[in-house]
Image (tube, rainbow, N blue to C red; front, side):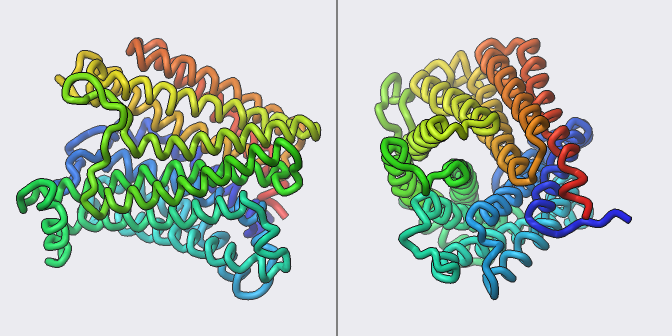
Length: 470
């Protein structure tokens, strides 16, 4: 008789399996309810493709954060302490993650808009997302308690530990911003104090009270939610990588480089969270730095500069980790893939992205009629989000998860080789498509993504008996 043990290893396996399956059916879902069909947009957030957002939140985001929660527990041994803290972890992450992953994913297939199927898919996704909030709260509380309860001490857990903690707090704040935006999207500016606050806040910026003020404010909140969430999750992943590969044992230049990176990351995490609070639920208009061109159209948005600083701090951490792993002969295929994937993220997001931002007079804000190259900017918008912010970080997460699942060395190397080859192919041809719009390059980029999917499937099959069966 087949049974499973509800522990972090199984919940990681379970979540990755759901993510892979839901990605596989995405073309079918898109055929019936197109992801980029504006007919599914809402009157209060008309510029948000909610069909795309709701599906991928269920299919990818929920499994991703569940796996990361399990990795945090395992890396910092949060699931080994006794008492209330352990019960909090077990009920929120092991039981909660086990339920929330399929709930959010299946509901996301049918969550087309708020009244579809009596609103049942919407409410099921809301329940799953609230479980995600509970995971974050459980981790934050446990991480505050762990140094004392375990006897390790607050001065010994290291900067990587505190970077993950800072990222978790920021992620929880971003989640509440998402809930605020979701509430207004589906319920409207109700009750009255909501519309009163929005109009009084936006009047000084827009000079009028009406539905447009509500739309502007709500879309700012939604944007702040997503722009806070992704860089902070990436910062947490980098801190986990450093912890797994021995940050607390580092010495010399590797330790110094990594510590400098962590200080930059923690400082900028706090700054970015504050920036997106005042720009999201407040009325702060984020300026453009180094403006040039007609009407200052070219330049770097200040928030992109600040999130970029988190990335540059992360780069120092990765360099220090790589140096240490090489010296200690710990540079395995998993870390090698992670470092390559990180390089591809930097080439995709800050390098290509900054180039486009400094040439917006040509690329034109991904809006028809605002620049001769607007169609390339539109292609880049999708590519850098899907590849740089989702596929690569999720593959890195999967690589770390398979490492903890105890996958056999030969199979682990094969999985990471497939991840590496697929990611490089997807990057080369994805970038080529962005600047040519040649569909041949697009199909080749999809081929790279398919190769990485084979890697995920290989990892799942290789760990099935050890993780699922007892």
